[in-house]
Amino acid sequence: MKSSIKGFALCTLLTTLIMPANIHPQSSDETTFIHAGHVLADPGKVELFQQTIVVTGGHIQEIIPGYLAPEDGTKLIDLTASTVLPGLIDSHTHLLMEFGPSAYMKSLTQNSIDFAFDGARNAETTLMAGFTTVQDLGGASEAIFALRDAINRGNVRGPRILAAGNQISAVLEFNANSMATGCSGADECRRLTRQTIIDGADVIKIVMSGGEPLSHLMPPIVFFEDEVSAIVDTAKSMDRKVTCHAMSRINIQTCVRNGVHSIEHAAFLDEETVKLVKKHSVTIVPTMVIGPTLEDAAPMFGLNPSIAEDFSESIVLAVSIAHKGGVNIVMGSDSGPAKHGLNAQELKLLTLAGMTPIEAIASATVRAADHVGLSDQVGTLEPGKAADIIAVDGEPTDNIEELFDGDFVMKGGKVYKGLSTSNLIE
Image 1 (cartoon, rainbow, N blue to C red):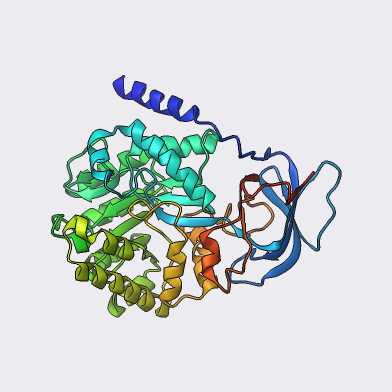
Image 2: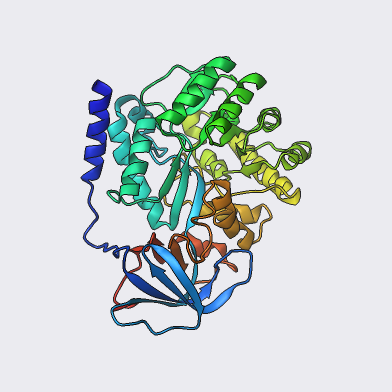
C-alpha cells in the first residue's frame, strides 16, 4: 500500500507542472504549413530545397516541392532562411541527475519524487536543445517511468523517452534512490530482468564494470558469461534489447559474444574487438563527451589529470577505429554525468574522430531511430511520421556547431521553441 501511495503521489505531483507563459504549443489537430529553405529529410541522402512540409494531427502529411500558399485557417511557419531536419535523438542520457558539487548529497537525501522533478527540469532543457527523443540508460525506475509517462500524456514538457530504469549490475545491494540493482547467478539475473521489464523498462542496460578511469573508486565486479547470456535471452523473450556499459576490450567482447544489441562507451576498443563487433552487427554508442567531462572533474575525484587526458584520447582513437571498421555508431551524450542541454557537443567530437558532419547528424537521427526501435515513427521527415522537426539558421552540413543552439523545435506537431510573429502567419 505504501508503494502505491508513493507512486500515486509522484504521478499527481508531476501532472501539476504547467507550461511557462512564453510557450504556446499548437494544438496537434491543427494543420500547419512549414516553408523550409533547406531540408535534410533523410540525413545522408539527397538534400531538398524550397519545400513545404504539411503537418496535421501531430504527424507529417506531405512534403511538397515549392512554397505552397496556405489555405484559409492554416498556419504558416516561415523557415525559408533555415536548414530544417528531423528532431535529434540522444541514445544515452540520465535525465534524473546532473553531475556537480551537490550530486552526491542528492543521492543520499532525495527521494524518487525529488528525482522526478529534477528530471522534469532536465527533460525540458533537453527538448529545447533540439532533442525530441532520448534513451535514458539509468535512473531510479519509479521516477523515470513516471516522468516518461507524464511527458507522453502531455503533462510535462520533454522529449519522447525510452527508459531502462534501474540498470542491472553484478552483486549490488538495492537502494531505492540508486540507478542500479544487482543480481548474482544466471537464475537471479533472469528473475531481475523479468521484474525490470514488468516494472516498465523499455530497454535493459547492464553494467560490466565501473568507469575504468575511476576504478580506484569502484570494485572490478563483472558479470560471468552465463549471467550476460541469461539477461539477454530473457530480455529477447520479452521483446526488449540489452545494451551493455563496457569500456575495456575484454568486457566488450564478453557482451558481444553473448548477444547484446549495443555497447555503451567502448573507450578502449581495438581493431580485433571491432572485427567481433562488426561480425555480430552490434552498435557502438561512444559518449565521447565524458572524456573532457572527466578532465574537468579530475581534481574532485582525486584522479591524476594525465589519466583523464589519456582516457579522452582513448575514446577518440576507439571511435576512429570503429568508424574505419564500418561499425554502426550512434550518438549518445551521457548527459547527466555531462551537462544537460549541451548534448549536441557530442556531434562535434564525433567529427573530430573522423565522421563527416552529415554522418554525425545521421548518427543522431535516422541511425539512432533504428537503434532505439522507433524508425517507423521518428528519425526522418516523411509522411506518416511524427512531426518532430528542428531548424537552425546556418548549414550544419558545413559546420556541425550550428546544432549547438537550435532556433526552432517542434515535437509531435507542437512548437516549443522559435514561434514568433516573424515566422508565424495566421
